Image: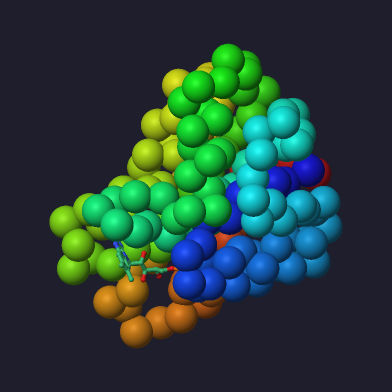
Length: 146
Ligand SMILES: Cc1cc2nc3c(=O)[nH]c(=O)nc-3n(C[C@H](O)[C@H](O)[C@H](O)COP(=O)(O)O)c2cc1C
C-alpha cells in the first residue's frame, strides 16, 4: 500500500499527486490519495509518499499543516513506515521547498525510514510539475513493495 499525502494550496501539487497516483496504480501498486491526511487513518505498514508545495515563508499548505501538527504532538510509532517526499516550491524564495524538509524531519523523528530519494520541483522551471514527477518516478519504483 502506498499512501500519497497531499499538501496543496492552489492545486499544482494536488494535480501532480493525481498523476503520480495513476502511474503507480498502473504499475500495479495499491494507492490511496490523502487530501486531508490524518495520522489515525493512515496504514502504518506502508510507504508514504508526501507531495506538498511550500507557502508563506517555507510553510506547509493549510490542508497538510494539521497532519504536521499531529506528527509533532502524537506519540505514534512510525518505525514501520518508509517515506519519500516530492516538494513543489520556487527557487526565488530563500525558503525553497522548506515544507518538504519540515515533513521529512518530523517523520524521521517518529522513526519512519527515509527511502533516500527526493524531488524538489522549482516553479521557475518551464516544465510542468507533473511531468517532472513522472520522470522521477523510476527512481522510486524499485524501492517500493507491492
Ligand atoms: C504566497 C506564496 C508563497 C510561497 N512561498 C514559497 C516558499 O516559501 N518557498 C518555496 O519554495 N515556494 C514558495 N511558493 C511557491 C509555491 O510552492 C509553488 O508555486 C507551488 O508550485 C504551488 O503549488 P500548489 O499549487 O500545489 O499550492 C509560494 C507561492 C506563493 C503564491
